[in-house]
Image 1 (tube, one colour):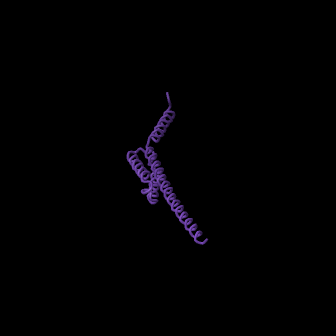
Image 2: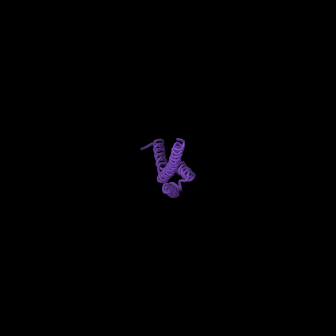
Image 3: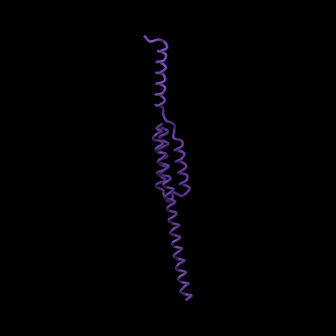
Length: 129
């Protein structure tokens, strides 16, 4: 037969185990940092005119952010974080694509200007001789 102290110790051990199990089973917190990062990346992409140069990537970022918000509402926090991270990545891709497209346009304009300058120099050299 168990003594009262050993029964009390057993009950405390069972209670502690139950507390640990219930803590593990609770929902993780909302992925606030991931959601904020996705929103910031989308805002940055919009400011860089990604809607004009990378509309598909920007639309995908918005869609995935909406899916993340829905997952939070359904208390599916792991899935919400994944969607938020995908949204941020899509928005960053839209920003990078926009920057590349703008840089290519500037490069093309500079090449055209250089070509015009070369033609003008050659024309002036022909007149001077």
